[in-house]
Image (cartoon, rainbow, N blue to C red):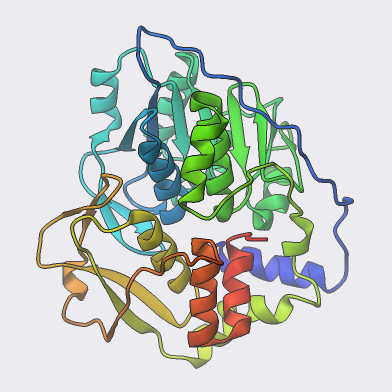
Length: 361
């Protein structure tokens, strides 16, 4: 969730000005087709996070999409050994830290996926990204993972995008980057960036298409109820304006000030679907009404896509209600089903506020 001070600034500006740019939908963004290198049969992909805090959906969606494709070797990587705290909820155990990754793959990754993280200026992470890029990796940032890549200096002179709420911050802090509005993702050579959180799915699918072809990407996309992954997108509609201020105030102010936060326990079971797990926990923990905690009698649990989840043991006894991951229906992709669940539980305004936070059309 974007910081409250950013929300306040956007809220004030929305009362007086309209977006400064006209709506334009980018539709011609394409990854370069994958070319095998380093004698590898399949590309190596590192999804890298920062131990102190990494955005949950940004990390899990690309990992799951690519792992389920069977077309790549994908690894969950952290800056340091040990567990990784996900934001706004849950914990997982990465497979490797960056030093262990370098030892295993001294020639570097083919692709590095960069989610939004709490410590955007982490020196170890920034240095590692620069080193991976120098070795030939394509960097793919999800949401405000672009701010991490920008802090590395690699975006200077390039085009990029990120979450709608940081547009002003990005233009001010990184003026040497051309920040592109109204697009789901931007491909500038070996530097790829995407819009807000929900852009993780189309960005992952267009990456998969460049590696394994359209048919394989479509097969994986169908698991999420997704049939198209073009760059067409209108980010202007998410900026605060009279039509959506109520929803933004609901999740950022009203729910947090006037409602008690309910602790929701989500049972972590072996083979749990990590996509529905992540989307449900992420969305419910953004409402201002609830926070999701992973619970399990086991010390760790491996999910469908191979990620290793760790229970929030300290919260095991204090969760007030239980919740199951929300799954897709015949008529609705998985995140539509999650939003419908929020609508039933907390009302339309809260569900809409979460959709805006996810930058979900």
